[in-house]
Length: 240
Image (cartoon, rainbow, N blue to C red; front, side):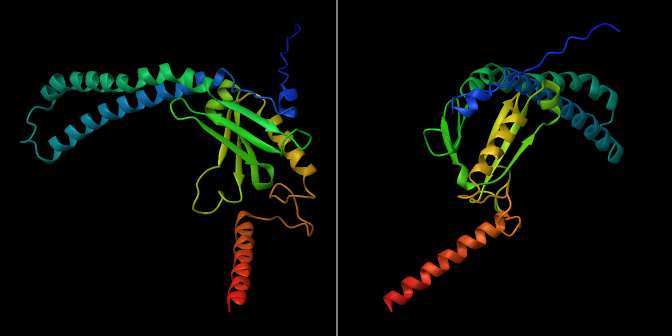
């Protein structure tokens, strides 16, 4: 067997350590393109299937409504397919055009304990409405890396970040997501490493507390409520 060339992708960890801005991979654009096209194809197929099986069911229940099923398909199947395609193009073409511009607006940054500012994760995104989110390390309760089917195909992944005030039962999904990153595992591990450095100051579910018990988001919420009740009782005593 001949020598096989192995390409090693070295993540720009120096950008993460120094808190510099890094962006999603170009493969993230390709992933969003493929997902949009797949949705358009799925909508087109569903429209055709609904027309076909709907007409067949009506003909089976009441043949008088559709006396000639073959003639109906010959007359209307083509227009249904054509107009479904036209409607799909009305949203698909603008989406394919705008996706690269949207991805170009995304910026990520991780400021560590040794950085110039307080440790936090910074995410900026938005084409028409720009959002800039700062997630302090002290509020993080859970962090994980995710690579779905499309992600694995394009060699990218995401880092999901949950905080104490957002990860309750009424909330679905993470508070912030760093998407389309090639070195997503390295980013997750680096953030966990920095969280361990802050263990003496902050407690999160990524680490164990002093009693070696895992502090869940519900426990965090209960602790906050208990503290608020104590403050309320003290204020009521002073007013009395």
